[in-house]
Image (cartoon, chains in turn yellow, red):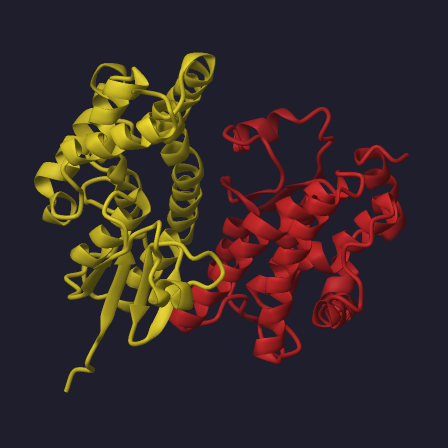
Length: 223
Length: 217
């Protein structure tokens, strides 16, 4: 008899780190309970399950918490290893994927955010840095359909959440990815249109637009 | 065909040490290539164009960068003494604490040592170390890996050895036996392990280097 699996995801709808985990769970066909967190009023469960950082996403698997989106995704890949492998099987492929995923987590997501949350010279500097990051990633993709070749995998999953921000980048960051990096833009559309795990896990870009708009208001950038 | 393993390195770097220690644990023969960080070689820049940093491991022509990525690679390629746990959950926990050391402990400690004793900065560094101290207390084992060292202990080598050197170099006593009894004992046990001790760079050289780096020379 199959073991009763209980999987809970503590998340915030707009979080790109959360989206990575949602996509991974969907790729593996794992049933789970989604719990939306109010980041201004975090639940006792979140504080108990991630006492060190108090951050989402957290996956609770049969009562045991796993924190940090990249660590969670690798965990999911290892536990549900019989379906849709995410990481490459060879050690070198894994190392490259981990390196790039770390780069995406630390640079791409945060610099893209800075680009939308600043103005003037600061925004200009963020935009320049963003372009440099994307040049590297664009080079890594090359002419392939997906980062690993023919199938959607770990690096695609790690980067695709930023597709939800494209509209915001254009409206608030002065950055049109379709014009600047057409190959990456096509890759993103391909991920979204050909993979239900992605289309079901990413929020409506207009909702993100509203979210970014509100954050900018809170920072006093706009009226 | 014989394996070709090169490690682009610099003795003062605690990140380089992680890779060196992992290779030593596995008994891997490698070529240690010493880099002058003020004048980096063309090979280093070729193998790590993104960050241009050491360590870089080059295995049969394939370059791997970022110390924790390198350590995991070494663990996967060379069997023998395991560095990561087998169980996926235990592995996730080990990765979490190694990342905590990198993302929280090291940056705050570095800031503290460079701060000329700024109380707020020093307190913040001690707060992060306290979290690690509590983890050791809760685990109740000799090392983060239990009876033997694992990824977390290797990542923590910067705390076990380098923090003491920074203390000598700057005069700031960040970790004391009174405030951090568990970390103090763990650090001693770690440094006294034969495989660790043999791989560590000499203390005097490092103190001199970091005195200069922290502007105290």
